[in-house]
Length: 276
Ligand SMILES: [Zn+2]
Image 1: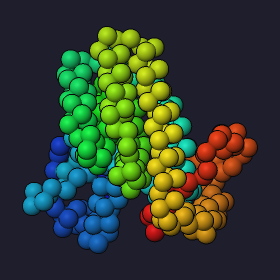
Image 2: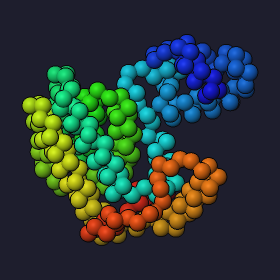
Image 3: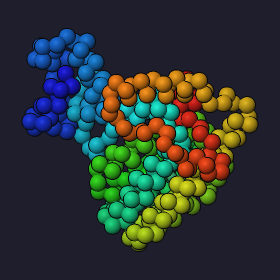
Image 4: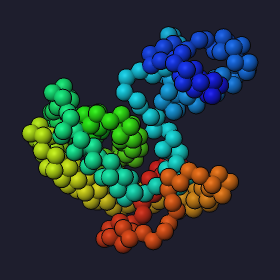
């Protein structure tokens, strides 16, 4: 089913925005059962390829490519991604993206970036609303980079970040400071200063990472359950078993020497903790 849809896309017979035939027709056409068609559609939806609209059917996604957060959150659960790893990934991606955005952002991109900053200042007392503007701000910059591959990767990491961050967001006490840092990024983008945009993005993510550690520590001292180590161990065992079988998927190389785990305060807080 997935392979069939893939080949239709490759041949140009399906384009963004096209509606897929009904399940029944697909089943007959491909020669599989309807449950298989349904399972295939679910898989395609998780990959961000199709989108079902209630009452209207299933469509090939249009607009900028959006990868579902599902694949990455599965990997996070399996491999026990840590917050530090996530911030590191964000820095590598988003500092570069900010530099490109400084060169390429259109007026429209800058306007939607500014809009999210306004939203942040309007929600200083509402951490979750603030977080949503924060995510959209980073997404707007990723779009402004003009590189849809980078934009998809940022989207994927942001979705994962949102999932984990929203559990501790209510503990954020520094939203004004955070809004200021976002504004600094915007100001640099607006004057098309590549170096300053990159620097401002880096500063923001470094500080956000430090704040996240504080929120984690505050959650721990309030007696919230500590990270479920056995679960993480089980996930790692499952992961290494799977790596042996698959011999691929080297997204995460498990544990060579980790210099950064020596940094102060960077206890390994698995991002899977509240997922049980
Ligand atoms: Zn941010």
